[in-house]
Image (cartoon, rainbow, N blue to C red; front, side, top):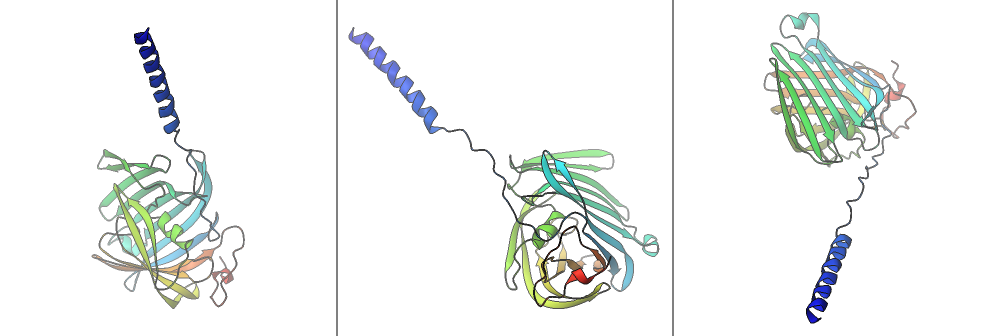
Length: 282
């Protein structure tokens, strides 16, 4: 009888231990997306630039918030950057670049990025899909008829090289301070630092603007190159429109000067004392 009692007691202890273990291991909480305010850009915004290679006109570029699309059930801005050299430059160094980014509307992180580059003899096509819920990304590259695939971890909220520019515009920018964000290019993740250098007045074909001068710490491909220097001037008003981009890379230098600006839907108030791009006409 004593042995039966001991066995019964042991069984109770095991059941109790199982119940305690179940209680101490709760189900993982459901993923909660962050809410990142955005009163800066929306669908319909378009910016056109004249590209100069030194003092030589080299081509044009456009930044467009094309549409709102759904990626895995999430509303996202589809942002497009297209750059092309002009006829004269085509004879020397032909450029036909297209970058596309799908940026989550609520969290403003990147969900997908595509890049199709043709620069001289160099060609590359890549696509990256980001999953904030699992904290991973899938990178695919096609070159010379071959496909390369890389699956790796990533921070929960990450920016590709195009969405980085739009994310920075929504951040609080103060001279002498920096903005940090998680960024990705290809198979690499890094922390991107954007320094707010100064308050300056800039004159471009579209007009004269009071701006904040930004300098990202360069890394990766596309907008942020691994060797060189990039400076960006954004208007000091609430839209933070990038009116001038100046790149200094190993092969030379180019400026992208804004020639046209079309705001998206909705009105955004201006900052007192700033030169407003809302006075521009498409």
